[in-house]
Length: 450
Image (cartoon, rainbow, N blue to C red; front, top):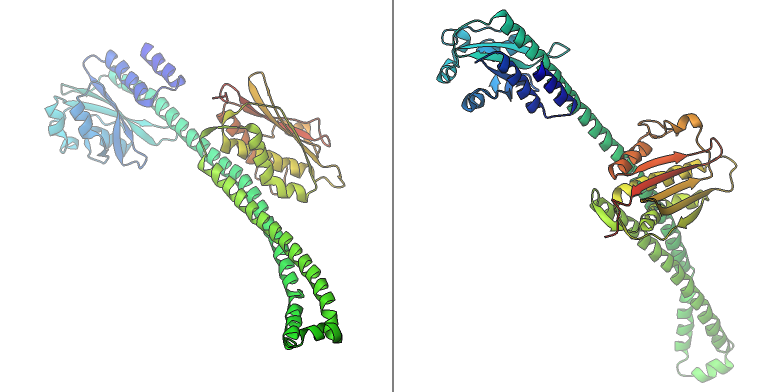
């Protein structure tokens, strides 16, 4: 019983499966005298047996049977796994089930083998628990009971570990989906910004083109041609000819007009250049964050906040939202930039949506950065629709959303990312119509100055 309790404690403590199975095997061997035991595990395909635990069997034997194919006449263990029933072989030397394996077993002085399938709660075979003896014989009733208990305990350990592995796999898939959803928020912000800049580019290029088409420059060529016609009598033409006498005034007016055209064109070209630079800056910023994903870097927290605002800048301006900054002086800190950006872009985007309540004219988002009690706090507050009390407890749950086209990944992903960085993401709201404040806290112990 002590061995069984030890195995159960190891399961509860999250010990590796091979270590737990070895304790199960040694516990039976301690009660069964000179017998040697083994646990083999059925692979995911359900066709081969893999080494689980067999501390007393020779290594050469364990290595030889590792990966053996199960079948109706594949020794004791392979047959038991195939038939899903206990197989008792009293004499390996003469039993037909061992025809292909008896030389291997006899070389290691193994004469009898009694495996029992280890079956899961659904009846599917998980593996086998086998007892070997150096003498040809059948098991006693007590030995059969020991094998039954050992197989039961092995089943618990195997199923628990497989369930943990499946849970971890599901959790990882969820995190990946959440991260992708979070990055979709960043990518959407980038696309909104980049997508709106070409509108300004089109306006500027159209104005420049219209200015060129309407330019009075062709009239200058006509005036110059007129002067060339009077090269021989230029003085008389400019002083006595009615057309010639008008040219100096015309040239003065034309020069002023062309100067205005040039200034307008230069202004629009400057706007065009700034918009192109804006696109380059947005793309470069996104590339920088993509390259540093998963890496901790020394940064100014306020720079990250500004970057998240820049990604949302076009949407905020389009919706007429005023941004208020309340930034405390903080030293550089060490954070995973990409995760922080993902969280902040999502929070600012949510705050923008919250401010889109009908009839609202005072739309305001306030961003605060402060350091206190060993943490750095980044808060995003809005004066929007607020959050009902019943939703506050579910706001970070996977799949929960109040948006018509929401996916419920953003806040859940943000909370997970904050936790991965040793911090937290919390929310406060006095209820519907009173806005909300989301606060990202990161430990200064992890974000200390270097």
